[in-house]
Image 1: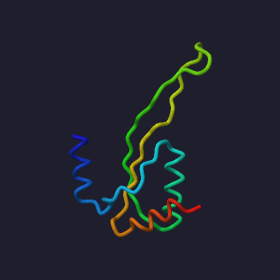
Image 2: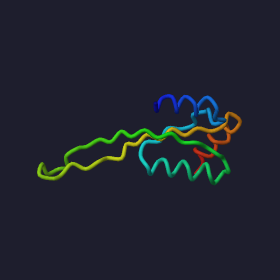
Image 3: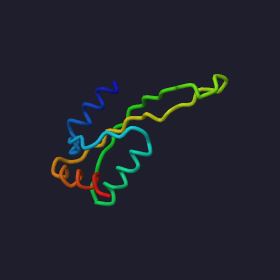
Length: 89
């Protein structure tokens, strides 16, 4: 059912241009801040890919690494400005 909703949202959304894929919350926030600062509206679709790994000591509990994937979409007419905003300092 989720794929149907994704299809429906993509079909009727004006945000069809995938402008950036961010991995992790910090990278997503950085890109979202830049787009907002330039007045660019966007839509985000997230996918969770949590990885677990052991620390240096085998007795430690595994910690989750934030590998959530954030696909950021903009309207086609905002594509150029969105690239400029993302790559600005």
